[in-house]
Image 1 (tube, rainbow, N blue to C red):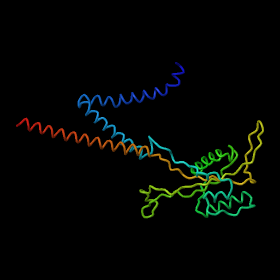
Image 2 (tube, rainbow, N blue to C red):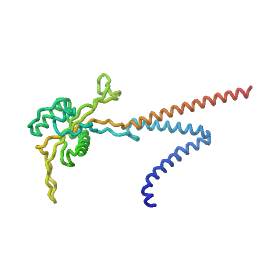
Image 3 (tube, helix red, strand yellow):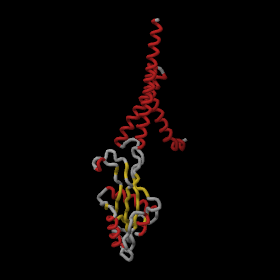
Length: 272
């Protein structure tokens, strides 16, 4: 019995919470209205109110991005072209149209030549103080470790290059008037990672600061921005709840109109 309680208590508690909430909140309102309207009309009115409340709540969640949320924006892998272990792979992956001649060039100088080529092709450098740098760094770290290009703590992110992501269409081409700019150009980022020298640790002493290994070539992580669907569930709830609410309001209006016509016809017959 103890094992059964440990294994099933969360499920039973969640199920009972939903059942009790439905019975107490919705059932009590329905029961009160049923004593005055009848069971069928009370059910229709209660469901109409519930649909209207869902539409209003979904609209609030949709506007502020809270409540019922979908996946947040994140950096996603470019299929088959994410971890690039040499400079020539940047062109093969489509990150650069042209690559500089780095044959026989030390890795540090080759990195500067590649950075200049990024700038020439429209990329911008994201500074380390920018929160976007940390987001790209975290995503690149995950991909590098998944592909086993580096182990944990064996590399350092040295640069992040960003391109794309513009919103359109713009009113009169002005960025401040972007109320209807619902579409986005693809947004890419390239993260440069440098290998670190192995540091020997000694018992009882603080580990030494690792330096960049200038004999190893830099590696790059090519990623595309996934905009996610943070407000999609709230939008579906708003539209769906609003449609149900309007349909039920029409049924209530139709019922009221038929009732009035029948009462007027009954009154006419009674006078005759």
